[in-house]
Image (cartoon, rainbow, N blue to C red):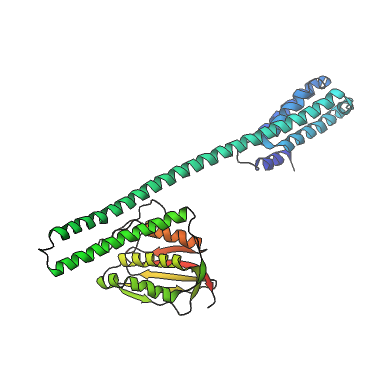
Length: 367
């Protein structure tokens, strides 16, 4: 291997700019020329003759590169002396020369260590800047996220207050049908606020690591039927068909309460963004090792940009439903956190105007 190839391979050890191998070889050539002109005084200039190339090689390419230059120079020194018919024994016998060699080894070790520490410091500074930028971005995202939460709480709470004022002040002027309609609206708004606060509390507990998971074998068809019962009224109001195509005896290993929370959130989203006379279907995607549960709707769908931001804090993926329903996106972020804690994953596939499918992959267990 040539010295140029050697230095190039040594230079690949780091990502810092290196002294170009040809430039280093040029420096070596200059000092060989100095020796050719002043070889009779070489014992006095050995520190200069050997030192600068060795130190440069050790600093830019590491200790062993510096030692390679030192021993290569020693060999060339001997060959040149032999070619000139001079005595070369002094190189190995002279006390001053031996001391110079040892000192160069020590200096080479020091400068290579200095270079390594400098690179480590540079990497640490880059990592610090990266973490600082990431932390600042996370804080901005959370600030934006909580502003969305505050906005989504303010709307329904204000509406509840206004409707209660109307009910109290105009109760004698309202007929039974109007009162019932107002009570239905109040119930819907209060349920929305409750669900939002419940999701917010669970999300905060997950962030703090304060939710304890109890893994059991859960039969998914029965759980899906139970979730559908909770949304029968909304589905009937929007004339949306709820269809459970999961097979019997499909078991997954998961925390039962967590899975109910996830299923409720996704089914609620599907109903929110599905037009009247649409359909929400729950089925399973065939897979050897996992139970992949799919919740598909015939709703308004999403663009690829919206899909990519679904599970990110503070991205503001909050679109009005087909009947003007609002959402903060908190439910989907909570689902992502919970499913990951259950050793699974969740993702979505969608096309604008052609519905959305959510997929939940969890470890499959035998019935």
